[in-house]
Length: 172
Ligand code: APR
Image (cartoon, rainbow, N blue to C red; front, side, top):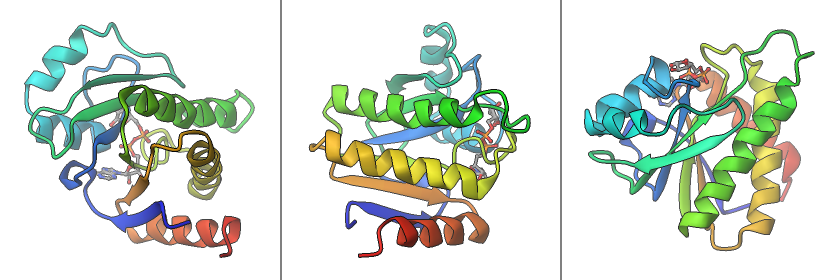
């Protein structure tokens, strides 16, 4: 699956048409990916985010990317892991589906994702990685204009998890 790339980097440094932010429902910034993206984009990002009136868990909203190496930021809100009995898997799937839907609407050809929900929101890494890759493989069959999906991992664990699970799902 040459359209999928797995890298270890700070997502705020990645160049792509769109960068996905692992936000919270307020869309008013935070730590982790959210903090890095807001720092990289500059203060105008927050000004635009304030006009969006937040974002529900599992949904995705788009802003410009300002000083980032991208044209768009797609803000999505992943589920907080509370044991797996509160629809967490379906909500995380929805994050990827909505991000690809927004990307397709914008005519985006390359999109960079962080490991949504696997940090502060404590979603188990391998379980989240399976969902991310399954939804990406499905989206690449549906949205033919998307030529490159970059998974930006912030550490060795995530990097190795994505590589292992991608090989399992796409042995070629
Ligand atoms: N680039 C790429 N990946 C990163 C970066 C970065 N700069 N910083 C953190 N990560 C990784 C984390 O190691 C984790 O694997 O991104 C994954 C998601 O972690 P979080 O950023 O904590 O996101 P999430 O778990 O979805 O929690 C969202 O955290 O920052 C707040 O405002 C945000 O309330 C929201 C919550």
